[in-house]
Length: 520
Image (cartoon, rainbow, N blue to C red):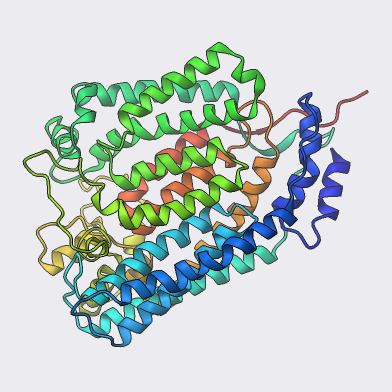
């Protein structure tokens, strides 16, 4: 194995990290499993294919779609906000096209640019053209101009952080005969404990809400049932968050680990107990994590993480998720809240244009950033208080009387809105605490961490072997799916499930593995 790693490192000149590791490690892994060597990738064939699709893809994302939106009738004014939004849309479209056409599978960066292109590019551009927004803008037009400019700055900072991460070499841990320390992997016995926790926690969640039938009604009925159960109080939603979190997150993580085990191990696919456990987890997730009783962003997390786990090395699946995600978000997502309310409370959507729902539903990220700028102008920055409230989400308000509320809720209350379940994108969270400088620095750190995680993930999936395997091979797809929620915000709402996932991963993680070199 030492020679394989040396060969991979030597051939990495002029190639990406995952290309080099894939090319060198694939035949060795195949021989270790007793099968014929897998054929190497064909970069020349893919280069020809990428050239064939790159021109229409780039033209479609950067030129055609913005031009179609610009031609829509509306009362929008073509001022500075219009042109800045057009630049942001084209910039995000170009970066998304780069992610789709790349030979590397950059999960976190790809999902980031897909979100930016849709929620902070195309949709706000349609709102500027049509002259409507899902949430009213209460401040002056200059605050909207500032918001769009700061989103652009944040995107550039994200790219800068990713560029710095790509310049720093990765440290690879290669176990030796004297040392058994290696990458973080899932301990088999602890994984079984996670499965037990998943069934117990989800079973309690289902029983507490009155049985499986409630999960196939509507989100409104779920919320009412949780409120009637006495778990949540009028002063704090910590109990409700923990009930939902432990009822859904361990079940998803256990399913992801067993999915990876079946994908990477022929022996596991031939073991009836493993297949039965996977089937039970699939049924459990169908109940607690179905799209009817869960928020659309959470179901996207489930779907994206499952796809990336089931096809860890498939570039086609990666590109398909990014490409079809744009179409689904623009055409289907505004209509996907059919099960949010019951039949009496169901809101119907009537639209004469495919772009009108983008201006009237869901995508309020940019206008909420503008409203947040107006709010901060009246009261000043909080200098870390909002982020501290998100990090200490688990502290009840009975203990911390001055615990900050969701950023979206606080801004909504200041605006006088009755419905305060409003977004607070990640740019907003940094802006509230630290202003423009802190926002740029925060986004640069996010870009750096995303790029490093993507590179580590590319190495982790190439080391696939029998058993649960690398924890990062599961954590990265989960974070990629959860990126939609983190970027949309508020962070206080998103922190609960993320912390529960981290606890579950810590529970099953071990840094011990079998010795790579046996004594003769």
